[in-house]
Image (cartoon, one colour):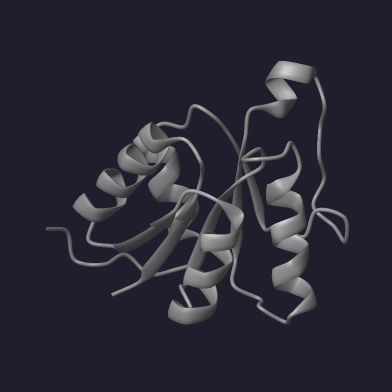
Length: 126
């Protein structure tokens, strides 16, 4: 069973994303801040990381993604963002933002599952 780590400071996003993925048969672990997020990734080695851009600081997600890559953690990262809608900024994947996918919040359940399935096989639904 694929393990998905969700790191986001918004409890509603954590709960909704977890529920959606669990009903599709994925195992989910969560953290609400970058420090705990780093720990759950190091300890559990998830198959996919879903990471929010803004947590305690406006760029926590970027720094955490960079930290994972510096430490050779190559787990696919899907980054949740609402910055481009709010501020009109666009981000590109690359060294500065080493993620595999950007997803605008809010995300539909279908889109969330489709993004995760780009990196892992479909588990058996519960």
